[in-house]
Image: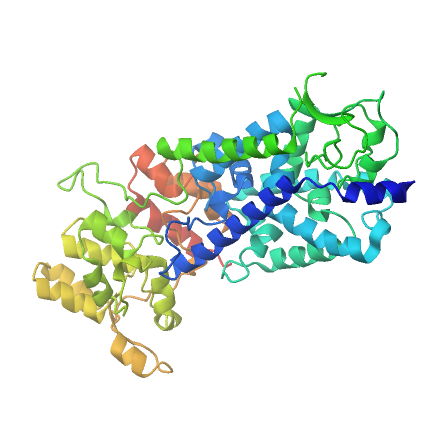
Amino acid sequence: MKTFFWKKFTRRRIWIRSLVQIFFFALILLISVNHQLAEDGGGIPFLSSASLHSLCPFGGVVTIYQYAAVGTFVQKIHESAFILMIIGFLLAVLFGPVFCGWVCPFGTFQEWLGKLGKKIFRRRYNRFVPARLDKVLRYARYLVLAWVIYMTAVTGKLIFADYDPYFALFNFWSSELAVGGVVLLAATMLGSLFVERPWCKYACPYGAVLGVSNLFRVFQIRRKEATCKLDGACDITCPMNIPVSTLTVVRDHQCISCLECTSEARCPAAATVDFVAGRS
Amino acid sequence: MRLNSKSLAAIILVILFGGIAFTTAMNWWQTESDKVPAKFSAGEAAGQFNPGDIRGSYTFADIEKNFEVPAVELASAFTIETEDPGSVALKDLETVYASAADAGVEVGTASVRLFVALYTGLPYEIVEETYLPQPAVDLLVARGTLTDEQLSYLQTHSVDLAALKESTNQAPAVTVPASEPVAGSDSERMIKGKTTFQEVLDWGVPKETIETILGMEMPNPLTKVKDFCAEKGLDFETIKPALQAEADKITP
């Protein structure tokens, strides 16, 4: 039965999401390279040469305390990060953590590595971590978030930059590359071969912030019990291992609004799992 | 209301780039510091930019824009050979003059502050041993606007780069005043424009000592010392050496 559905739902993909992900990955990569070129006195015309810190919405999150306390930003953080944070919150309130599922280049990078893991392990992929352990580990990212915010508030410095695998990925050529970031990047790359989006699931502090929006967002993923075939296609396909087939409304704090579970993508029953506002 | 993937993609792009476009139009979108120094609020130079507020992130072009010191002359003074002198960042001077730093003589942002002050005739109080490359001294002397006191200072605070380049294994040809020791503070523990009270506390200077120097209660530790001085009307150039002296007393 599952084989049937596996074959069936692999034919339908939300290609527009892949396109958007490729766009943002390429954009950030180009800007990051351009930043280095600009530092060296060159640069690509008509392309931003902003630092990655100034384009990361999480930079806005970690500077909230300092901004409220003394009216300044944490070192290396600028207004742009604060604005992106607000935009990220707006998107999250409306649609959930779409930043994670559609925009974040590091999430995209993990997904691409995950494709290799799927080829190697096939059905076993993304099912390695025991359920009970996995459930506990999913809250670890809130500990990371608390630590990052506390340390940034106490020191006034961008502490997380020294451990950020996303920053390391796009700064391999830079003198700002930190050992901690490289180690976590390597661990994430290795982990992505076994688990889909391991950084997002267990450690990403920005994902932790946006994940809270799943509790109250305007557009939600809803499943109609009346037409559901209970085939488990949505459960199998969810990158975050959410048991969609057991829920009427997905309010799991790990949902990234990728829409892969919906009737537009993997669910074989029409108009059964939808992305809707209200109870329609 | 149902939303499909194409609509969601369009909405994400519109909100994201629309938000950036809107904030850019409102002049809120900033991806770097504005690189405009503070102005003197009193005295003969009131309303003019303060060389003491020049930051390491500035380029020679920023100096030219704010103080009308040509980037070409700055490059010449600091012996930087480049086709684009405006793009030279002050923070890179420490790398260029690394060998001088190894000998305990720092040529960096403070040197540019001093050079700009002497070039423009703007007030600037030297609070630490600051050295200039010999070409910079020659350029200033040639302008003929220095006072005897300034000339005397420069005669004992110049770095002969030619000699330095010829013999990198030898100690740099630095003119150092015989009676004054060369400042050897660890640059990591040097009070600068961006230093916060938290950093001073982290170096081991007690809160009580800081408050004694300030003559008032210390603000939120994340506040920059310089910003606090400006806000409270304190002279940063007086507070800075006092705090630095306390920091230097403590062994890291």
